[in-house]
Image (cartoon, rainbow, N blue to C red; front, side):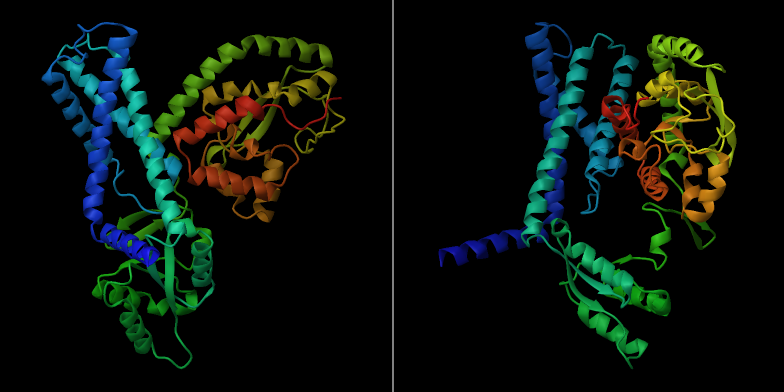
Length: 475
């Protein structure tokens, strides 16, 4: 009996959580504000009280005024986070994306507050406190979200906090959706039933059956997954969902040819679904990526200049021919450019069409070494400065192979909607050199659709610590 009572109590708590979701969301916002406030108090105490011993600085905890200012800043941070839609959380939100948005919104709040300090000529405000505060608040906010996600995923995997869904459609898309959510119990999506047109059933009868299923408060969402042969039911099905006040999601029958995050534009009252827009099409994202490419390539050219000098001497002494190997590659918007590398092979007649391999006899001994360590790629930093390439992106290919792959590999040409890169998502996952082209394209498309600045940093980090030594054999 005690166990049954426990289950009843737990069920009552979960029901209360569902009915009071708005209050829980408010608690989520309030707890963020408290964490930001406490992070400032901790930063001021640690930096000025422990590290510097400077209690005279205006950032120190001196009186009620300091606590009030910290509270006002906490409110401002929460407002900025709300503007970044961090409180519109869904079960399908990416953990990494949310963590990145927390950092970006915190940075925006901090920079705007710092600008205000400068405007009021408060330049003596401790920069050390601001630095410690930024790191502490970002860590606290993200750790809280990690804890929330872990707790909710475990609850959902055990059958609690479920989202009850009705699937409309009798084709493969409806079946795929049902199978997918069943294989991911941590999402907490429970398919109550599938509604599809029965044999000899009229359209009106199908619609009446759907209305009977979703009438009331037991169903949270309807997922419409109609095939091309069922598309005539789309409008009436959505109208019934709206009549019943039930949220509706649509899996289009052309699901397999659209990206993860398409863009919708409007021409009058007509909606245009842009199938191949990418995060890098956004002006701010494009500016951030290009600015980072310029700064990063300049720094890396300076840092690697001694290595490049050794490569120049070694290439010159290894065999007759030029130091740099210049090869035409296909780049952004299918425009050709000359890509630079240190020459690692003997001059030959198949350099523009011959596919290199890990045991290529055309390699010189020194060329084999610089290819093994990726030193031959260093001149491509100058390609980045010119704007032909990016630090991170899909690898470019020679025109000879592009013409072949565009006919035989689905979606191959999509990768040329962005700048090619020195390293990329495919490369750090072992797909470089003589490897599967379809697998490379699959990784390239994932990178293009999911690009973030933090993803670029992750790829660069993994390249620097483990991705520069390839599987080629030394001669």
